[in-house]
Length: 52
Image 1 (spheres, one colour):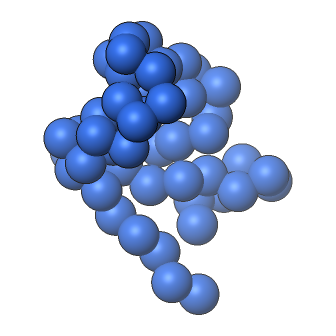
Image 2 (cartoon, helix red, strand yellow):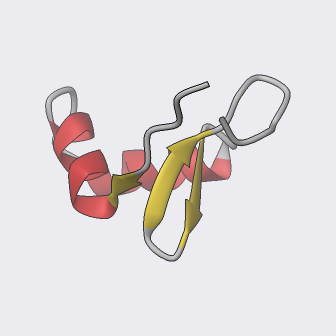
């Protein structure tokens, strides 16, 4: 399985394509367990709550 790791800047750019308040959206994605952050590296979390 391929896991894409993204920097905070890369995540911000992706979210900014859809919404101007990318900081709040990014934080909420972490709070809702959609994204996971470790050492400023972000990755998606699957439906079971595990990192993918």
